[in-house]
Length: 187
Image 1 (tube, one colour):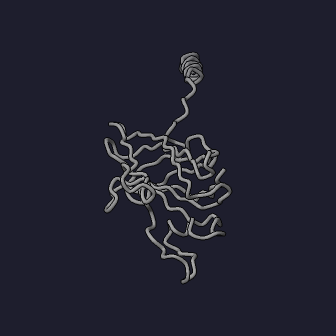
Image 2 (cartoon, helix red, strand yellow; image 1 turned 45 degrees about the vertical axis):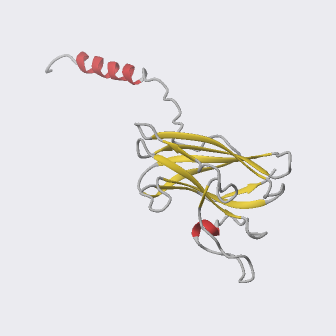
Image 3 (cartoon, helix red, strand yellow; image 1 turned 135 degrees about the vertical axis):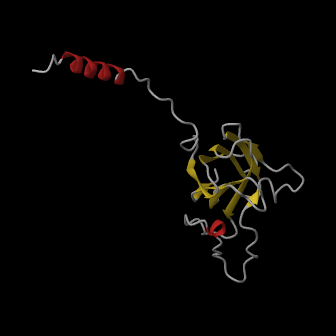
């Protein structure tokens, strides 16, 4: 026998005791979509970053669309991100979960209005004089925004597909984070 086995047994018991002393981890607010009726993770199309978004339609007094849009992101530090959307609203029946406008796939016939821009920065085109909706990340690259969008132009009961996007530059983004396609129902 080469020596007592107790040091090995004591070491193993000590490691097991340490393993049991870990504290439960806090939920990561940037690792999943924020609370809301329609939720989606954000994925990087250009650059790097991660996060989530949600859209919740709430009843509006004039009968239009009022939505609370939430974003949680971990991306480039100290960077301003513009909030954009691509909504399939031009024609009834395009709430098929595909987000043709965001993907550059027009479902409209030649007699319908022109296709128009793919992604539009909030609040354009509804309020050409208002400030563009944006938010900045902190030194760790973490940022969040809760934004209320209100328009009487989308009547109650309308269903439409929507993809959200965050970009650090409207014309030549070095970061482009996109949501999945969400089908929104206007309450």
